[in-house]
Amino acid sequence: FFPSDMALAVPVRGKAAAVPVSGARRRSLASSTSSSSSSSSSQRRCRCESAVRDFVDARADLRGSSFVLSGGLRVETLEGTAGATSSSSSSSLPNLLFLHGSYHGAWCWAPNFFGFFSERGYRCRAMSFLGQALSDVPQEGKASGTVASHARDVAEYLATLEGNTVVIAHSFAGLILQKMLQLDAGRPLSKVAGAAFLCSVPPTGNSAMAGRFFRRTPIAALKLTWAFVTRNFESDLDALRETFFSDDVATRDLQEYQALIADSCKKPLLDLGRLSDELPIVFSEEAARVPALVLGAGDDRLVDTEALEELASAFRSNGDGKGAQQPVVMRSVAHDCMLDTRWEEVAERILAFLETL
Image (tube, rainbow, N blue to C red; front, side):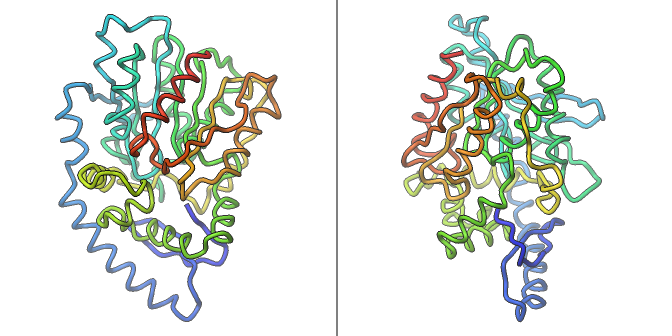
């Protein structure tokens, strides 16, 4: 999340991560980080290798399945079962397709959002990107895909759903959703009834945003950089809380989420070193007219308000007033807004958006 031009590429679980560091310590730091991360990664896999599968299997309100992409690989899909059989479910309501960010999987929408929206008649689905959670892991490349390839996977799955769909994307999935809208601009966007971006990376990516964090709070930014390099939030509850959650999230919930996060990222979602090759994302007038909600979190340590405004303005500048208006910032909510303590306030705001469609 925090790349820097003056950075050291430290190999961590087969990926390159950016760490600001002085020249005198480059060689020793690279050596020690590589060896220690290899050992801790092995321990995490042993401890948490079945966490996601156990979570899905244990929930009666989830139907786990997979979707075979045109290339032959399978992506994990989850469907909430409560709304599918409820008499309150209305065929006039759009599907909801939830997309997760880095180090997460489709599971992250199940603890709170699936039940909330299913009870209100919405059919809820979520998809895990390739290389994440229970989806297949591509063998080639540093990352499990590019922004464009992940966007094509989403579009392919979306095309199989009956009726219109509102896509709700979190963090880096927001960038993937933006790319899907851009790629689909040449065809009718009739199946996309709306788009909700939660704590989303903006159209220009995360580099400028990372620079702002380093200028404002350099020590905190360095801690977060180190967290993503070492993935210490997979084994350290304090690091997990500082990276994704509010201070008042219950420890028991945090422990459950930690096991699931540790089991989710089999291969990096994106190669951040090559992310700029696909950016910025520029919407056509058609794509910018898709009704959109841009929602952020007041206590988010990863996505700032400038990034939210950039995304909202991308819709406003090319659209006709139907796209996103001013971004909504939820107070006392952290980056993982769908799992955080005040998740219900976020869900209520999304529901208000859905009711305008």
